[in-house]
Image 1 (cartoon, rainbow, N blue to C red):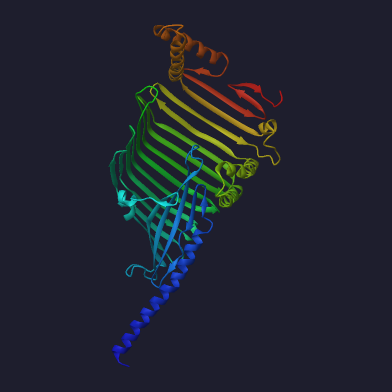
Image 2 (cartoon, rainbow, N blue to C red):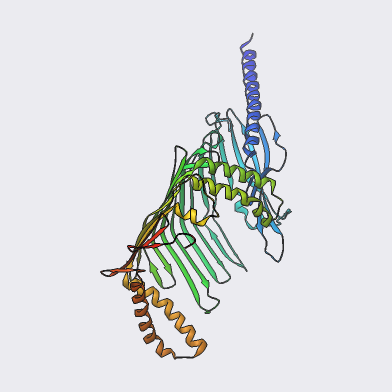
Length: 475
């Protein structure tokens, strides 16, 4: 056999093998795509479904999925507004999906193809937002079913008669193990500014990361973290005719979770360098909260039942849906309480202009096997709680003074019993009386320059600052 003929046969066999392999892998991709839609078709106000039949080819395939979002239109309309997002998927089959990179089962490109409002295409949407039409999510699917995805939406800026939108884009990268058993990734949004109807919202530098593993169906544990450089809001004050403002700077929220034995444990920490409301500024603020001993199986079963109920009640109005779901919530509460859950506020610390606030607390349930949610006295016997809170007295006085001043000003305007010049003397007298009343009734105790309170509940006995106050049901 001539070398040219042999070479030609080898090339032909390689092409046929590649084509055959691509077609076989294309079938695997189709099965993987369809299985990914099963069990995730409804989630609250969201639903996901295949919009068109999967169109399979030798080297590539196409498909469409549709995400439905139902939002309350308002009582006056009496119906829900439905928003549909239709996505196009282009599957390039392996073993070399792009012809040059490492072998893989497939590479998938996903683009937003259409936006519909109440089933009608939103005309001119992509003319107004061409960046969203150009944005592409690329997912590489390995032979074991794991995926690596990336999405980059470029910055966009719009000015029209309704306001201004400046968005500095979005980046998402994620890695998922087969069947979603573990998820890792990060999200970054450099900034967002919205000006409309006299209001301004500016968000700068938001970043998130997550590293989660499936502990049970619908339950993921691990760590997720979000940080925010700043958030500023300004809006008109309709009553006073002025403007109000709100500000957050250097905020971080971290959530750690663990599945141990048959129990779920969560720890969340919040750190903010600065909080502002109008001309008053606070910070730093630090809070750490733990939620322990949640029955993992009960929560997982509830999530699955909730998902199934959502599919069955997709066409039911929200009020009727809530009534139908109430038994599920009741059953979940019973199972969670039977497991002895515990809520702890490990740390609460806020620095204010006139002092600091520190505190902590615990709320636990004894976890007896038999109880009735409607029997308050029996339920109270199984609750254990404790709280400790302290603040500088000058801060407490400042907060009380602001509240009492507003009340006195309202009374002066409504009844004209005294003039504006009398408000401050009345305020000073009332403030001293209020502080003395709190101390005399043992609601607070004075320790140096601080006012503190400690309270606990155990075996139906409530203790406030060392004084026991029985509160047994029926007495």
